[in-house]
Length: 558
Image (cartoon, rainbow, N blue to C red; front, side, top):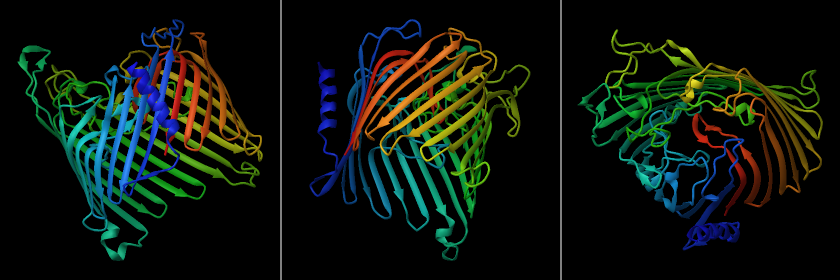
């Protein structure tokens, strides 16, 4: 009864909220509500297990009060019970996020929960992603200070959210950024812009008993304080831009690196050029033993203090994303090149409306890891782990993706998007063994605008692979997918899709969904099957189990 009451209250609140900000005591109240629910049944053909709890729901509600320089916020969450793929430790309900903040031209103080990022996140990033079930919000104090134009200083201390509790480690950080052009009046209008930044983050965690697995008589001598620092540089000149950040971390034996005592480091470099009709971006990355958590024994994706961005294209088409890549925190080297070009209209290739072409290439490789001596293997617990040459790659290729996308308006009502990708995937990145998977994926996406309110869209996707189907990996084998979507009156839509594993499992994963949007409120209901696999966003992944049933999503803001 309690769960039904909470879910009913959330639905009623989202329906009753006027779609405009309200005033209270001279201030303004805004917020939003999100309700996701699921009913799943057993389906042995696709591996969907029997779910004891028939109705699963995740509910979020944010209230934000602003009055001048003062802001206060509350977020209510309810997981009764958590939807499939979300950790059972989320089970429960309550106010998971609350904060008070004061801001003026020079200062910003936040007490309570907050999200923050230093640079690219190599040493610190606090953020949430509801689709992944991730929330490492800080609980503590965050301060920002702008003493002079072009200078920003940050400082924080607190603990990270851990489901309904907080991790054991205390996280502390300082960060500074200087925009050189703002400090020198004669450079303010200069074409060349320079920004420098640096940060330092440390975590303190109490000692604990962890025995050497090679000799149980020895207890590891664990560092109670672990520090990480980074330096970054941003240079732009007209159409050119160069960004780089280097980070390093002190000894940090933990469950992710098998409790070795080697320091960590990471380098991220990005160069870009842009002009009308052309954009080029080149990236390079090296990561070595940079898993940084506020609880040394934690595995999985919770309690990461830092964030190591992925260097692959984040695909949106389903079969393009069937083998997503997760950042390898214990060691990877990668490059990515992205080119976007607009072929002018009126030319032979551009036609009447012009043509957009995007080409992307990414490759991720292991790093060089050498044994310390003839008797100490790579990564052995309670040792320095290994030595590594900074500019030398390892022997294993983890992931490679070459893709081309062509977006072409064929007429005033018809638009075509064609895409091809060649994706190589090494199962070792997911902790499995086996040969490389080589996949060819083709997509055709056609949109027909019937009139200003009615739009018809269709997709055809095909994946051909060398990976023969196995029951242990239900995404293996060859696939085809078809989708039809119809939007009408600008408020309603209905879609029907089917993914078919035609060379192996022989399973159909059909889905039908419908939605309605009114101002800032959106309701969507769907029924169908979900394939087991990984859901990845930005190089961070979670396992999604197979399911067969009904889903509901309701969002509203005011």
